[in-house]
Image (cartoon, rainbow over all chains, first blue to last red):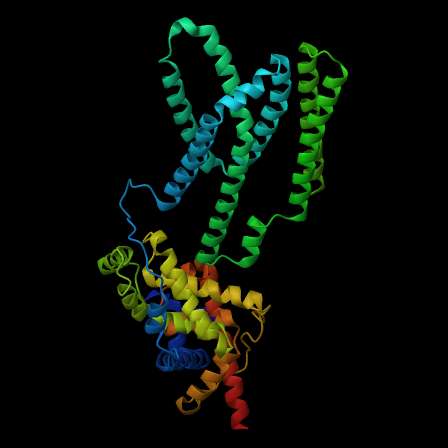
Amino acid sequence: MSTSHISEMEIQQYVLDKTICGAGVVEHLSACDACRMKAENYLLLFSALREADRPVAEFDVAGTVLAALPEWPVLSRQKGSIALSDRFVYVIAFAAFGFLGVMVWLFRRDLFGALDSLTTVAVLVLLIPVIGVLFWQCYDWYKKYKNIMKKIAFTTMVLIGFLSAKAGDNDPGRDIEIKWESFHLFSMLLTFSFFAVAILYFIKMLLDDRIKNKLIEKGAPDGLITQLLQPSVKDTKTVIVKWVCILGSGGLGLLLAEHFQPLGIHSLAIMSLSIAAGFLAYFFFIRNTEKNR
Amino acid sequence: MRLNNEKKPAEADLVNSILQGNTAAFGAIIKNTEGLVTQIVVRMISNPEDRKDIIQEVYFKAYRSLPDFSFRSKLSTWIGHIAYNTCVNCLEKKKLVLREDLEEGLAGDEPEEGLFRKALSVILSAEIGKLTPLYRTMIVLYHQEEMSYADMAQVMDLPEGTVKSYLFRARQMLKTRILAQYKKEEL
């Protein structure tokens, strides 16, 4: 038999389940009064704990909770069915792009008229910052909502595919006219894309809200929720700087293009360089910010 | 006997029934888990006024999140986890400490005298109340609710080894304090 006492953990283990204790522990306990006394104390303690009164709720939990539960729509758990959250994203995406399509269709004559007065170069000069802004914004959101954006991108592709298929039905003899009209349609769509950006921003707000609710329902600590979803001062600063870069570079490009009249291929170069300079400034700002973090 | 991890088919039926719109079936879930939720809330939250709101909040959260329940754990463990997190949030909001004095009052080398049942239940109740919310909850989940270490780890979002280690210290601390209190009363 070992002369040194067994550990407190071994004593606890012995009292809880002696079958998994080593022979040395059992042998020591049978011979050592001090350790046996400790074991008996634990035995008494555990027995008293088992027999101690359980607290009971001081109100009718089931009655109170059931009375306050909201009515619930029937939800399916079947494999392969689209989850409610996914359906929500599809509906919003279709609604957003459907709305855009309807607006374009309703105002097509006015928009064509407005665009007809512009030269091709002028339209291109306007298009470059629009494309830049859209690309910039979409890239930011893509990073944040990668999975959801994939669904929206898929929906867009389906819609574009549908439009392309319809365009293919036109008379091939009117190629040049169609191309010019397509170009105008494309310009118009991009202008309307600003509306799409607004809609996407709305979707973003909804998604943030839904994520927040999910986290709260899951009982995640408040600190974590705030950290994940509440924009920090630094984030707000970054957004401001981003828009200063976008609008500043676009505005500078337009000013320079206006200064070096008449509009020509050099105007496109000016716009492109201005937007590129804006991107570069933003890139340096982000890199600097991340270094300081 | 420790509760095992078997998934009861009845649980799945119950959950599906609720998801099909039978809100009354949620009452059965409440009845089955009320004791556990009350244990956790009472042991974690000292203010009796807050307890009623928290118990209700736990079930509202469970009800809303039921479509996301994936049967990876027992329903009672999942609801216990919601109860524990809700209590932790409440403690954090009120800036109360969950794990103070974890190292305090561990084993001494003094020879021990026997505990006597007569005084034990009274002292035990008082001394459990003096433990930290975390230790209190662990003690009752294991010794009264007969939860396994694995289930406790799921409820408390802690590794199983940490649960065992904390529980060992909680028992040791409780025994030491009861003995000290008993001796004091003897004098």
